[in-house]
Length: 467
Image 1: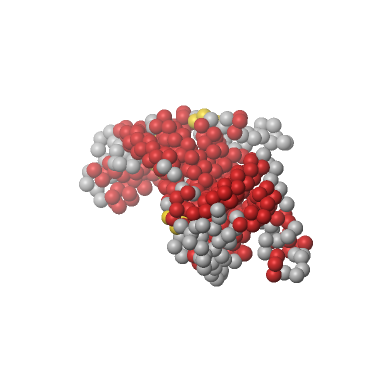
Image 2: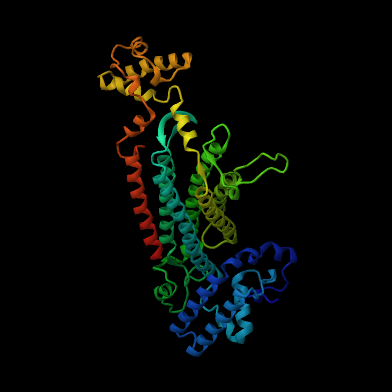
């Protein structure tokens, strides 16, 4: 097949080079966006006087027919066509004849693919944010529902202080609201037009680029043509946001995997979101959470991969940039699927509330900080209180006794500053309810956090509706 650039060459492309350099096997995902960009380009050509209105109508009709072929999965996508841009141009030319040769007037595949990819990215961001907002909603609902469910809180994976399950789940919801904000900020930066920059230096034709941008729903134009065809910052932004999101999902997955173990026993997974063993009949495995955790590796790698491709490139366009799509397509698919799957996993979970409460209530020393605060209220410097309670903790561990079960006489052996009945006033519930400072784990604070999350969700949805 004749190449769009073949005039300067006397020999056909080596088959191995043909296979090595083609991108249509993966950039076909840009087809709908390429057609969208080409439709706007036709209107720009008419406005600039480079196409007669009748020619513009004919090319528009040809592009619409190609769009229907694409939707019917009848558009030829052979590797010999090199890329999706050439495939669409060839298909249009087959429909409208030699007039198809005017479609590429004033543009290069450099500014064409940069435009197509930005249009795709806006679409990908919308899908990701919609999935993320749904998951935030589920976490916020569960947080409110479980605002009084007591459990141990952990640092270093060691029991630390009592918290509520609602507080724990809400923490992940807040992480994801920040993630969605990163994606939406990326959408704002993606909302600029490269088309009209040509191969690198701009075009000789009187294109109204701002007008073209408006036709494509873009808010601005990229003002430097060298930057426009070679910049991939916005995709690095997206991959960074995706990596951070996947990291948060991986952390959530790790908690759920631990909670599903017999050692914790905090949750029971729905059969529809778990798998078994081909050998061991008793197994019920948290494969969904494990895969979300595992897929973080590829999402992180995609970010590093694109940065590595970009780090040594001179201006302007280089064929290295063909590799950018692998990274973005894969991360978009992975993070969006992870958000959707995690939403279903959480929505169907059964929390073993009594087991969680027992984990907190039966711990011998979980209320150590609360005991130290008793001394602080008696005007004991915290460092001294910490030391005294540390000795009390050692005593409890030796005797196998909970702090809240100690007698006044036992506490008096360590300090005469403990008020009478100190231990009897210690409880997991009292500890949680006492955390009234904004951001704390008390049920009232969790209620407040749920309201904040509801407000954040509405803000995200409002931004989505305006995209």
